[in-house]
Length: 497
Image (cartoon, rainbow, N blue to C red; front, side, top):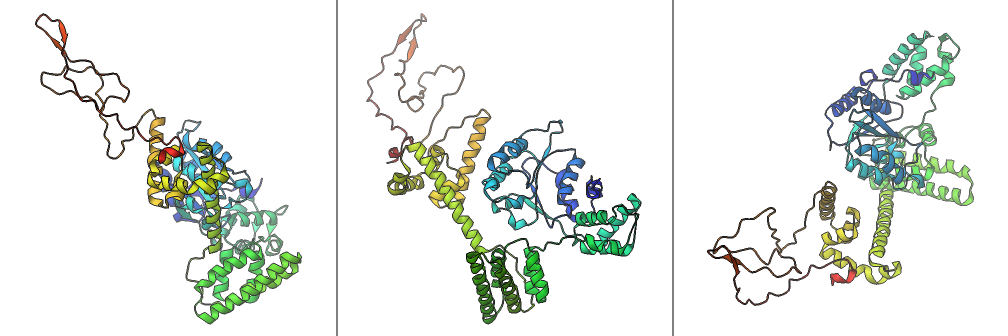
């Protein structure tokens, strides 16, 4: 059996390292209640994030539903699997079902289109605990991050890893030199899973493992973009920078954009100008690579993009948060706006039966004016969500308030309640239910306001004589009241005028 799976911790108390993170997860599990924020566990691969999520479920006796990168995480799949699981009870009767979104920062491409938005919707409506797992916290969509609490997992120390490897060797009856264990721990880069796999590979068919046995079983180390940028600003030597650039799992054009974004923290105009000059040179080589399909030029681009900025940074380090390129955020905002506009056009076309071209050219501006004048009514009539309503009125706070109120009303209606909307400046009086006492002599009766517009005329007041026979009083002639102003319906576009 695979040693990494065999010695995988089953309880939170068995997990090695990251004690503070483990305590935070345990406290979250014990105090979890409906409406509590989900957790995001983030950190390097192989340091116990997924293991901790499953260990928590075992400790709390919760069932689990897991979606990972191998699953097709489209909006439909997430809503079908995770959405149903987040609102229903456990099949075993425990009452809790833990939803685990593994590699949640790896939602991209056509297969995951709509996935981030679907996860955010599942979080908002969930009545079950949720844990998201990510290697890069800022690779998660912002709409998801703001709905969750974060727990950071740090790389394990070599001493901690070596101690756990010594325990495995003792359990398997393998004699391993301390130097060999230390070498495996040092080469693991804080990754316990990689260290256990390296030990397993070195111990196959052997009863003794020495230092020479583990030289060929070192970890295929992958450097993150954050480590590369830190090395650039720390003034690492050229060979180290080039090695890091090769190990980062990204193309040179992506790496260049990350480095360019970090250059805003460089002090001095001349140093910053030199950094951008070398990045421009790297960009020219990248362009030639794509145009000519001659990928040997990439090595020149890599050399320019790491050596030039490193010289400009001067080894002073980076004292600001390393953020994704700003252009990515702008491009993402543009794509989001395009998607929202397309959704709005579809709803308008379905409700008003107007072709798309006519909507864009002739009717979109007047419709926008109507929505700005009465956003609440149109949000209900067109079933606009928060983003679509904000697109019309340009007020994020108000759009969120209206969307929240509408969602609340819909939930109440689903539970069997009805709630009438009282318009500003109008009041509605409703007659009390059940039998009513006859009005006493001289007491006014409620008429008019509670009567529906097409109701039949009220019956004449009835008086009783001494014999008990009823006689109809003649009511004096009254000036006919004007017809009540009909409510403005938004069923058609032109009622708004």
